[in-house]
Length: 273
Image (cartoon, rainbow, N blue to C red; front, side):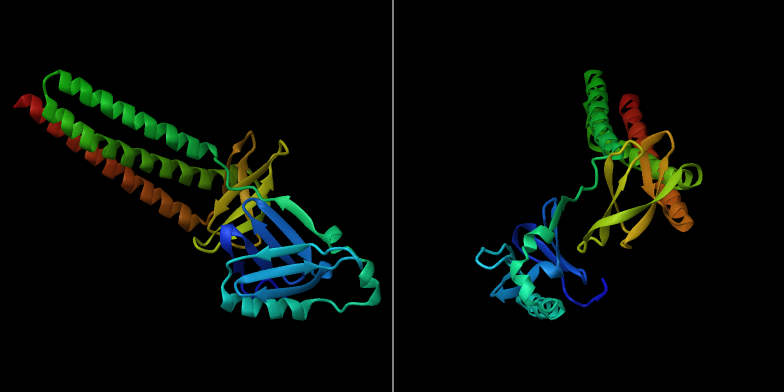
């Protein structure tokens, strides 16, 4: 059975997810992911809104059980029969097999708190500081009406203008890195169905496992990074998307500059009055 199988994904309480990939079940919660081959499974059962995966175990020993609570009854009704039907036939030798030895577990890295996000936080703090200091300076000169205008609208104008610059910067990297950087294929680690995005993992030249999110949901995707700075990386985008992002960034920048021009004009009027 392929990954395009109609067998549903079970989503339970506390973020627990159980998937059927055709030759294994994948149980995940938070950053932990457990891969359970079908050869390791004795049976899968449902009781109410709970699904349990019981592993094969040597005679006389307690089997390991993985469970998902709070699942959809309708989804469980499709999931459990499909998995049980795919389980391999058991023989007498299976009585000596410990299914837990066939199970593998690993941590799934989240999309990183990358330099772009840290830069945006710093910019936000800088915008707030600049706006407050500017308003205070104008107010101390006796123009509190102008100070009020700055407090209300300068952060908006600065924020919109900086956001436009960031969009242009990211669009530039999306154009530059695939042409002048190093491109590699990265593997999909997780899919977020509610947003239509996925997290892809890759190992940079320094041996660090990195994560990046994107709207692409294929098993692998091309990623480009700067040859001398692995912190600059991006999922390769189509030329049409890059052009669209550049146009959007320019429009947003002009809107922000227009707001700032209006703030400056109103502030000047308060001094001229």
